[in-house]
Picture 1 (cartoon, rainbow, N blue to C red):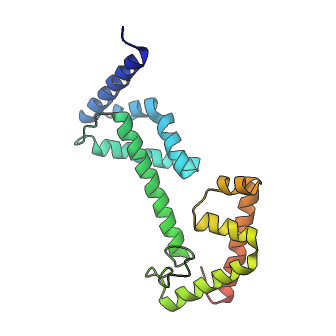
Picture 2 (cartoon, rainbow, N blue to C red; picture 1 turned 30 degrees about the vertical axis):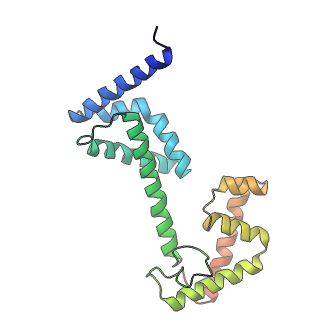
Picture 3 (spheres, rainbow, N blue to C red; picture 1 turned 90 degrees about the horizontal axis):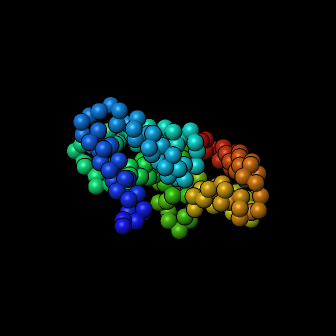
Amino acid sequence: MIGSEYMNDIGIHAADTYLIEMFFERNAGAINETDLKYHQLLSSVILTILENREDTEECLNDVYMKLWNSIPPNRPQSFRAYAIRIARNTAMSIIRAKKAQKREAICFSEPLDPANTSTFDNGVCDYEESSKIREIINSYLASAGERKMYIFMSRYYFDKSIYEIAKKLHCSESTVNKEIKKIKTELKKKLEEGGIYV
């Protein structure tokens, strides 16, 4: 007798094969069928990475378009695994793009590496200005206190989520968000006092 787990696998692969054939036939219903079957799974994968429901929905639409544009020519053995991989890669691309925009906005590519004199020089601002930014930020952090330094470094250097920071500090996420807003306001003021406008 064939086990139920094995039968479930057969059912999954059969459904996946059907979806793949719909894409190959350029059947416009392929995306709707994919959404019906995998919306919750793909949304969960994306939300885990982006941590934002609005961004997740936009990302999911991009995933569907990438599936449409890549099948054919690709014929994945497992549609489910293929869709998950595309969802992860698309979400990570969004994260990388946001990080790049954030870095460019304050003229450094990798925050706060005092040992590397080129850290803040990404072609957006010259070496002298980059050094000045680094000096102002480090000076601010030195006088900001341990809590603010931890929050800033965790968020912008180690790329920790608000949830992770709040858990470590035993406080609410809203508290961390308020503190980050205050840090950004104070740091912006320090930069502007030094002639740097962001």
